[in-house]
Amino acid sequence: MDATASATPSRGGAPRRFAAALLGLLHGHVALFGEELKEQQGHTLRLLVLASLSLVFGLLLVIGLSAALLINFWDSHRLTVIVLLCAAYGLGLLICLLRLLTLLRNAPPPFSASLEELARDREQLLP
Image 1: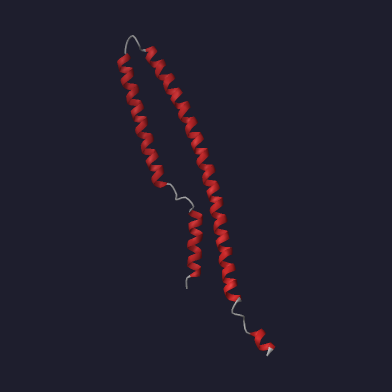
Image 2: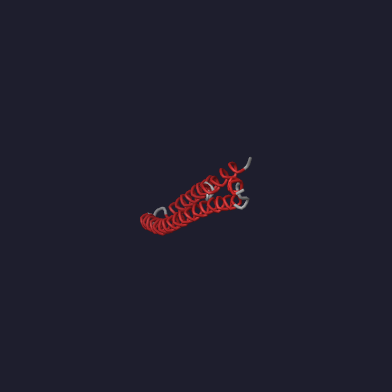
Protein backbone atom coordinates (compact mmCIF):
# COMPACT_ATOMS: atom_id res chain seq x y z
CA MET A 1 0.00 0.00 0.00
CA ASP A 2 2.92 2.33 0.66
CA ALA A 3 4.23 1.79 -2.88
CA THR A 4 0.88 2.75 -4.38
CA ALA A 5 0.59 5.89 -2.26
CA SER A 6 4.09 7.05 -3.16
CA ALA A 7 3.56 6.34 -6.90
CA THR A 8 0.49 8.54 -7.16
CA PRO A 9 1.30 12.22 -7.32
CA SER A 10 -0.09 14.23 -4.48
CA ARG A 11 -2.79 16.67 -5.31
CA GLY A 12 -1.24 19.43 -3.22
CA GLY A 13 2.00 19.50 -5.25
CA ALA A 14 0.63 20.65 -8.61
CA PRO A 15 -1.14 23.78 -7.36
CA ARG A 16 1.90 24.69 -5.29
CA ARG A 17 4.23 24.28 -8.28
CA PHE A 18 1.84 26.33 -10.40
CA ALA A 19 1.66 29.06 -7.74
CA ALA A 20 5.46 29.06 -7.39
CA ALA A 21 5.88 29.31 -11.15
CA LEU A 22 3.32 32.10 -11.30
CA LEU A 23 5.05 34.01 -8.49
CA GLY A 24 8.42 33.53 -10.19
CA LEU A 25 6.98 34.88 -13.42
CA LEU A 26 5.42 37.82 -11.62
CA HIS A 27 8.69 38.53 -9.82
CA GLY A 28 10.55 38.69 -13.13
CA HIS A 29 8.02 41.09 -14.59
CA VAL A 30 8.04 43.37 -11.58
CA ALA A 31 11.84 43.46 -11.63
CA LEU A 32 11.85 44.30 -15.35
CA PHE A 33 9.23 46.99 -14.79
CA GLY A 34 11.32 48.52 -12.00
CA GLU A 35 14.43 48.60 -14.18
CA GLU A 36 12.54 50.22 -17.04
CA LEU A 37 11.05 52.76 -14.65
CA LYS A 38 14.53 53.71 -13.41
CA GLU A 39 15.78 54.03 -16.99
CA GLN A 40 12.83 56.19 -18.00
CA GLN A 41 13.25 58.38 -14.94
CA GLY A 42 16.96 58.95 -15.58
CA HIS A 43 16.40 59.55 -19.28
CA THR A 44 13.61 62.06 -18.59
CA LEU A 45 15.71 63.94 -16.04
CA ARG A 46 18.68 64.20 -18.44
CA LEU A 47 16.39 65.45 -21.19
CA LEU A 48 14.83 68.03 -18.91
CA VAL A 49 18.20 69.38 -17.72
CA LEU A 50 19.63 69.53 -21.24
CA ALA A 51 16.50 71.14 -22.64
CA SER A 52 16.49 73.76 -19.88
CA LEU A 53 20.16 74.62 -20.36
CA SER A 54 19.72 74.76 -24.12
CA LEU A 55 16.80 77.09 -23.72
CA VAL A 56 18.71 79.46 -21.41
CA PHE A 57 21.82 79.60 -23.61
CA GLY A 58 19.74 79.89 -26.77
CA LEU A 59 17.77 82.80 -25.36
CA LEU A 60 20.95 84.57 -24.25
CA LEU A 61 22.40 84.12 -27.73
CA VAL A 62 19.27 85.41 -29.43
CA ILE A 63 19.12 88.45 -27.16
CA GLY A 64 22.80 89.23 -27.74
CA LEU A 65 22.63 88.85 -31.51
CA SER A 66 19.40 90.83 -31.74
CA ALA A 67 20.89 93.65 -29.69
CA ALA A 68 24.04 93.67 -31.85
CA LEU A 69 22.00 93.85 -35.06
CA LEU A 70 19.75 96.60 -33.75
CA ILE A 71 22.70 98.65 -32.51
CA ASN A 72 24.49 98.21 -35.83
CA PHE A 73 21.49 99.27 -37.96
CA TRP A 74 19.85 101.70 -35.51
CA ASP A 75 20.32 104.81 -37.63
CA SER A 76 19.56 103.37 -41.07
CA HIS A 77 17.27 100.31 -41.10
CA ARG A 78 16.04 99.68 -37.59
CA LEU A 79 12.46 98.82 -38.58
CA THR A 80 13.60 96.39 -41.29
CA VAL A 81 15.91 94.61 -38.86
CA ILE A 82 13.14 94.32 -36.26
CA VAL A 83 10.72 92.83 -38.83
CA LEU A 84 13.36 90.38 -40.13
CA LEU A 85 14.26 89.29 -36.60
CA CYS A 86 10.60 88.69 -35.75
CA ALA A 87 10.13 86.67 -38.97
CA ALA A 88 13.22 84.57 -38.19
CA TYR A 89 12.04 83.94 -34.62
CA GLY A 90 8.56 82.98 -35.84
CA LEU A 91 10.00 80.57 -38.40
CA GLY A 92 12.25 79.01 -35.77
CA LEU A 93 9.29 78.59 -33.43
CA LEU A 94 7.23 76.93 -36.15
CA ILE A 95 10.02 74.50 -37.08
CA CYS A 96 10.60 73.55 -33.43
CA LEU A 97 6.90 72.99 -32.75
CA LEU A 98 6.51 70.79 -35.83
CA ARG A 99 9.57 68.76 -34.82
CA LEU A 100 8.24 68.40 -31.27
CA LEU A 101 4.89 67.13 -32.52
CA THR A 102 6.66 64.62 -34.79
CA LEU A 103 8.77 63.33 -31.89
CA LEU A 104 5.74 62.99 -29.63
CA ARG A 105 3.77 61.07 -32.26
CA ASN A 106 6.64 58.70 -33.10
CA ALA A 107 7.87 58.06 -29.56
CA PRO A 108 7.94 54.41 -28.52
CA PRO A 109 5.53 53.52 -25.76
CA PRO A 110 7.05 53.42 -22.30
CA PHE A 111 7.63 50.01 -20.74
CA SER A 112 7.47 48.29 -24.11
CA ALA A 113 9.84 45.51 -23.01
CA SER A 114 7.57 44.63 -20.07
CA LEU A 115 4.50 44.62 -22.29
CA GLU A 116 6.22 42.40 -24.87
CA GLU A 117 7.32 39.97 -22.17
CA LEU A 118 3.79 39.80 -20.75
CA ALA A 119 2.38 39.14 -24.24
CA ARG A 120 4.89 36.30 -24.79
CA ASP A 121 4.00 34.76 -21.43
CA ARG A 122 0.29 35.01 -22.18
CA GLU A 123 0.83 33.24 -25.52
CA GLN A 124 2.76 30.44 -23.80
CA LEU A 125 0.15 29.97 -21.08
CA LEU A 126 -2.85 29.85 -23.39
CA PRO A 127 -3.55 26.47 -25.00
